[in-house]
Image (cartoon, rainbow, N blue to C red):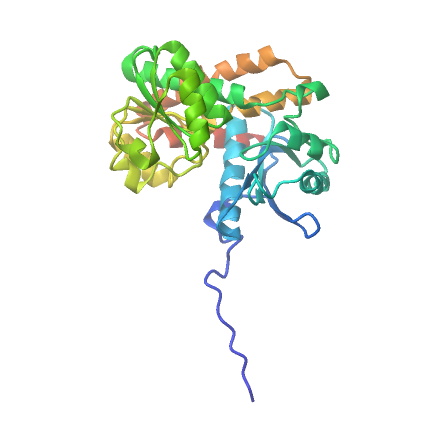
Length: 360
């Protein structure tokens, strides 16, 4: 009798067994051959309210990388909403593909139909690779979308508010470290100068900080450098720069075993999600090096605060006022970390988790 040999899978539990899956309520895989859409929507929690989180379009190396990304981002959104006092759950979506080549209006409309099938459990918005025009396409298929253009009654691009929140968190970290929140004369390296990074550079240069910028996009580097007088630093040379503040504003996991051996800074405060490659290991390593780490899911919450306000009638001034509260919350977290002898990430996470647990 002939026996068919079956090659064993390397990971027999790639979904529920995935470390990043922790606590997720729902994961939806969206596939449409006609438009080429391949997307994953992660809903981590709806305890505090509907899961709100942006859609990211990125050319991932493989599907498991995309899955890990959406799960980590979705989980982070739960804590971001919670610690910001918003009645929202955590969710995120990723579309697999090159936004500069593969994105079409039809693809975005088809994605909007998938979002609509979730009946409001997930509300989408902009993220990396997605703009307000794309949100218009999604909006044509579902009401469960924020970050739509101001001409349609929305708040438009949330990037300026996100950057303002990071700026507030950075100033609070400076106050805690040096006894003053003035950034004039401080050396700040901004890694990633997309919309959020550029707005952060604007705040910093207006205050008189010495700003270095780093990005894989040469055109963006030249444009931002020329406009704000920021100095360009190429490649991974950013990790060897003598700086006061490192501001990661691109993709996550840039604080890791390799970079921590090279980083020479007093504060890490940026807009990127999941900056710590391993929350426990690298959170502790940062603390042991005497570096102040402003938890990412706290200080980059301005964009979420901004789009959340759309759900109740958008008011820009109110959104900025709530985002300004990130300053006081950051100080609270840093003091809690010192008092309890835990990392700043753990201090922030415990507050966010408690609010979710109390609502359960």
